[in-house]
Image: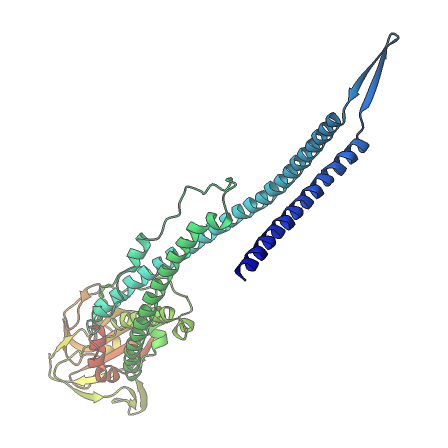
Amino acid sequence: MKIIAFIYALVSNAAYKNIKAGFVNKRMRTISNFFMKLRETIMQRFPERQLYFRTNGVVRFVSISHRTQLIAIFALFGVFVWTALTSYSYVFRAEILAAKDVELAKAEKNYTKANEQFDNLKKDIQKSTMALEQRQIYLQQLLEADKSLSSTMLPDQKQSQIKNTLPQKNNAEPDVISYNAESSDVIGVYQNHKAQLANFEFSIARIEQQQQALAEKMISRISRKIEYVENTLKKSGIKSSKLIQLSRNRPSLSMAMGGPFILYSENNDIDLSSNEPFAKLYAHHNRLIDLESAMQHIPVGKPAKKYYISSSFGIRKDPFKKKWARHHGIDMAGWWKTPIYASANGTIIKAGRNGAYGNFIEIDHGNGFRSRYGHLSKILVKKGDKVTLEQKIGLMGSTGRSTSPHLHYEIWFNGKPINPQKIFKASNNVLKIQRQEYDS
């Protein structure tokens, strides 16, 4: 059995080798046949050709083999391919350059736009910063004037730092002509600056909110002061509107005032009801200043220390004719030669005999206020003298149309008499206002 198996293996191996050799020979023959057919086709298509040349009867010819023809054809084909590729490359490159020019134009436009946006944004921030600084100074002055409010209520003083640390635009313009440039590269630096400016805007907005909150507190406090002043004037029988009208354009020399000029609307009534905190604050503050300035002229002092009211202001029966008559002042009865004092600072405009008033003094206190003193026994001043509050100006008497020693005292405002007793009742409040000593 082993011998039979061995013989079978030998036969099988030989058969495999024969089959393999046959397959290889067949493939070789196929390839050989292909090249032979190709050669025959080339020989048929490109047979040897002769070119004849005749010159002066002499004939010559040149033989062109099939190999030469193939080389010429391949050379021509190569030239054609090279020409086609070169032409395509030229046209395609021109298109690329044209597209790049469009991109560059767009980049330059974006650069110009970014540049303008940067400048405008920076100007807006600088303008806002300047406004913040002016408001900061204004608030500081208000807080210093009102000791009841702490200066720690002021926002952090960072706006000046913001002004000094604003990012500066780079003067070196990017190379927008470079073919490698992209529009995003051109404005990249400005996007960075824009982000920085956005941070500054946020800081400015935060400070502005703090200032507005403080302004609202100041408005509330000033409003209470205005209400206090107007109630005092009402009790005194003085119209605040007329008082302010007379006081405008007449700065008071007795009050220490100053500071920066901050423009606000000429229509103060509109500003008083404005929703914009600082416009409203300016309006309220200026109204308070007008009222306080005007009230410096009110003759709030009492012209005598010891007295009693023997005849009041208004309608009364005349002591001589016993008929109802208008009394423009009050009669302050007292002892003979009781000292009489000026009821406010002012200038003596009359001093001497004046008919029924007897010995008479009239003082101009400014802003429409005047005070009159009648029936004096002696006058201690003369016309043109400057007098101060509680300066002795005369002595009580009974000169002129008088029944007994007393002072006939009048207060006039804007050409009309007002009741001195109302001024006396409000004198404490008026003095507080004149000294700017408001209750907290």
